[in-house]
Length: 88
Image (cartoon, rainbow, N blue to C red):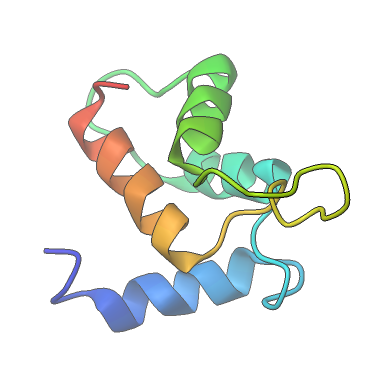
């Protein structure tokens, strides 16, 4: 499903990324997901933050680079999959 809708997911990611080179912040991710109409119970802000941070890949150098704070496209796809599955 993610493959067949890749162009839509990429466009959404770029729209909600403040700077597409840096990626999506946790605030942008939360704002995006709060706009989605979920069937059943909406995820809490705590759950959204947990999904966000669990979806980020491990970075080699977190002391001198800030790219571990922003989500890139592949991590965004993983976060969407985690939300769809709702087992984090």
